[in-house]
Length: 344
Image 1 (cartoon, rainbow, N blue to C red):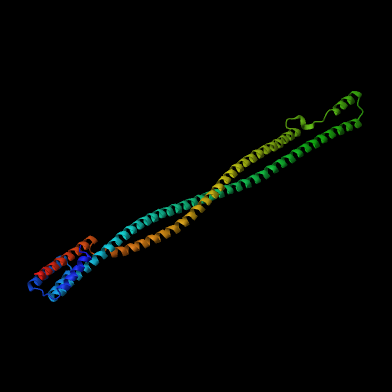
Image 2 (image 1 turned 60 degrees about the vertical axis):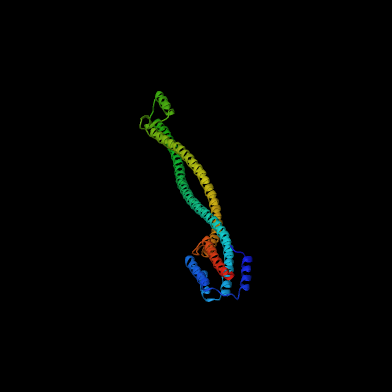
C-alpha cells in the first residue's frame, strides 16, 4: 500500500514535468490499460481515470491519478476504521443480544413458574376452604341432631321418672285402699251378729294379715304395676346410658373435626402467605422482564442499524479492501507508465 510520503513525492514529480506533453501511443496504452482494469474490477475510479487520460493534458492526467490514489488510500483507511468499529460494535451487540435473550428466556420461565405456583396455591386454598365449610356444616348438623337428641332423651328420662313416681303413688293408693277395705269388712261383721269367741279370734287374726284381694292371682293389679314400674325404671336407665354414649360420640366427633379444622385453617394461612410471596416475586420478575425485554429490543434495533451499515453492503470488508488495493495498484501502474514515458 503506498504511503503519503510516496504520494507527496509523486506530486513533486508532477510539478517538475508540468509542461511535458503526453505521447499519443503512451496515452492510448494507458487508456486501454485503465479501461481494461475498470471493466475487470467494475471500478468507477479507474473508469474516471481512463476518461481523464483520454481528454486531459499530460500534467493534469498524472495529478489526477495521484489525487485518486490519495483519495483511495484515504477511503481504505476510513474503511479500515469503520471495519474495526463494526467488528467491535457487532461483537458487543451480539454479546448483549445473547445475554438479554437468555435473561428474557429465564425471566419468562420464572414468571410462568410463579404464575403456575400461584394458581396451584389458589386452587389448594379453595379446596381447603371447601373442606372447612363441609366440616363446619357437618359440625352444625351434628350439633343440631345432638341438641335434639339430648332434649328428647331428657324428656324421656323426665317422663319415665314421672311415670314411675305415678305408678308408685298408684300402688300406694291401692295398698291403702285394700287395707281400709279389709278393716271395714271386719267391723261390719262384728256388729251384725253374735259370734263365739273362737270365731272372733279367727277374724281378728285374719284382720291383722294384709288384705290382698286380687293380688293372689298372677294377673293381679299389683303384679302389673310392678311390671310397669320396672319398664319405666329400665327405660330411664337405658335412656341415660344412650345419652351418655351419644354425648361421648358427639364429643369425640367434635374433637376430631376441630383438630382437622385447625390443621386445614393453618394450611390455608400458610398457603395464603406462600401465594402472597409468589405473587409479589412474580410482580417484581415481570417488571424486570419488561425492562430486560426493552433492553433486548433496543439491542435488536441497534443490530438492524449495524447490519445495514456494516453487513448489507453488497461486498464484505475483505472484498472491498481487495478491490480498493487493486484500484490503487492499477492507478500506480498507469502512473508508472506515464512517468516512464516522461523520462524518455
